[in-house]
Image 1 (cartoon, rainbow, N blue to C red):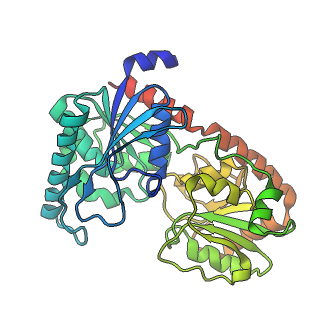
Image 2: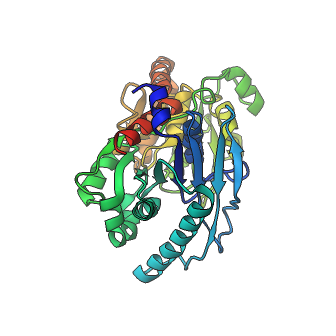
Length: 387
């Protein structure tokens, strides 16, 4: 399908997302990257990201954003009343969903009024997209990218009708997740599910001058450096990665993120630790020799794709969620529950510059193929083919 053709078919899109990133709050940054790419295709994008009146961490406000290419994105953040999320029972979950739906519909009626399709991010928002589709007659689609889709069980059991009858198509970030969704029966057997791995802005995530990046962080040219980007939590393998690095005092690391686990490595091994703006990440990971994220569960890890775009070999998990993007041609895949395997993979890269270079080259090739612009185009085409 030609690009100008789908612009004629789809001109306006409503996006429902639990969170939407802002300059000061990058939560769900990958959603913002995708919607920016869709807006740059000439589609008017309206995001509805409801915010609980009790929300403290996510400081979301309604606004109009402009992409780097000048496209406008209209972000609506209506307030709604939610019940406590801990130890939710069916009734409190249903009531919170009802309040959220009212906020979404109120915003749609007053600010958006009409569109060609409704797109939602993840099953928790998919139930609202399906309901809004029933109310308006507008086709609805949902993405799935949860690290553990079974955590959405209340959504896809209580609101099965909205998912089965009113979702026209599903965008999955991995083959593994698509298979699991089919097995659980979250969607109708007739609902098409297509796999579109997470992608990146290849103009941002690209190889940078290694010497300059290292100089900025005070890293020596001959240091072996491991980088990590993600939440400092057990699911991401942060504790096991630190343990593996600690066994080699001569190694250094760059740890980008924050979380419940503390950085326990000696200060002389940590070239950097903490949060940085998303657009600065390439400068930091390009100072390293290898990217390591021995995560236990993912949909499709954006941080890994970003590292590949920067041309880094990867150490990650030998689990199905990685198989669409990683292989023994660009990574060493390990049991994420084994510190010994994580250490051995890093030792292999540290001792073999030739292998690092080969895997780096292959990693870059894969990263460049995962362009956010191409993913946006493919998702638009998929939705249009199922309108």
